Length: 196
Image 1 (cartoon, rainbow, N blue to C red):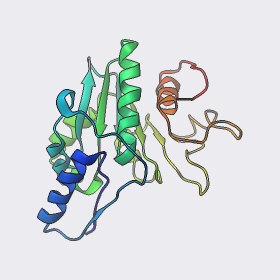
Image 2: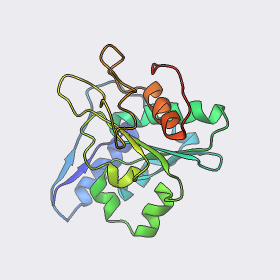
Image 3: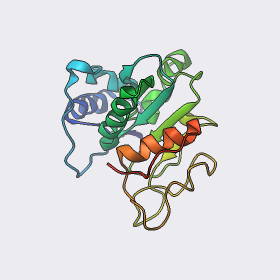
Image 4: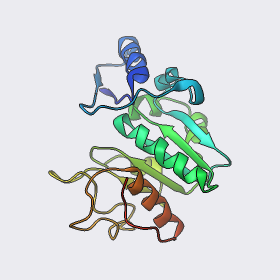
């Protein structure tokens, strides 16, 4: 009955505390990062109060062809990747999904309205184990996660589609470039090496 919440920024931290205090279903673990992450300017983004639903559309540009899903400290990376893809006229939806448990308590209609089942190109990013994300990215999606001690990104995900993306000697950090690469791999195009 443990509810885990990974807030993206100070705005979501405030709401996460409220959600933890209101949670009568069991204990709540608030998982914070030690990294310095920016406090997101909510003027152009969805309000942080949406965190109480477990997952929500934080930003969108155009008719979504791609859904990027971030949690915790990786939401700002997903936003940067989304904005970069939008500059190339690719419709992008960025989802902040700080709590699987809170999200699963929402009606299926709400969850589908956030994740858009019609969009097959879905990429999730978490600086943690990728286990569990497959239910949200679907059969055709990809996951950028940390599944090995001492390395900061997963070697492969999405049924091996991205195995060629990260080899020894390349960058082993979760970055905007990795998300862009994952999207391009799903779309079948060939970008440069991951970076930024």
